[in-house]
Image (cartoon, rainbow, N blue to C red; front, side, top):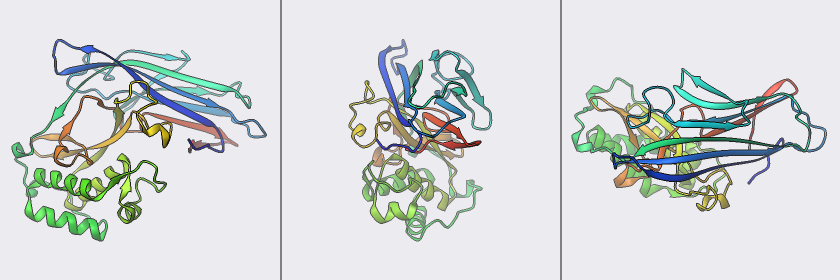
Length: 299
């Protein structure tokens, strides 16, 4: 884990598989998100700190009828607030602290909820979309991306082209969560051909942009490690386990369809452990005010 100049931070997402619902396709999870931090000793002083925990997006199988896609929500400290961002259609819990922020103080924030999820699969052969159905204008992105996307577009209809994009990504990139370049740095990704889910999604977005397919990033949970600690990625960065980024594309006649950019042949198959959160930030976020300016916590 890297140390910020401001705060030593750890966030964990853990879960318990509760049961299957009467609809055997639905899996039920109890999720706990924990963010702990220690304010550094020394001369630095913070006027305020905000901690945000994302909540699941409502899906067709979510419990209840409206609002957030989870039930049994609780949080500690209990002065946290539930929040809805209309622009991003995002639900979250946040804490706003401006008192007793003494150097060396340890803070802990916990949110808990129950969420239902299904495995999803889209059959691209059922898609009726044609290239002429799209209104987005293709964009020049990068010479390599442009050539790959153009060649695939010429040979395949839109849904099959999306699958070919993911096959090319799987063949081209090697998963490595320890890379230090930014997940949006296309030049670095193509040069080193390595990255984590955020890098994969960036390349997928670029391919879609080149051919005019509407695409948006999905932030969420990937509940493969119940304790939030032993999934393997904790050796790279302590907050990586159980978080994930993937994508959605909009196909005329089918709507928004989920895609796993790293999925290759199975790109349209999304397991139940992948649970969409809001489109604002990835699972949690920490901001602090110092010298009258708000700053995002950087690892």
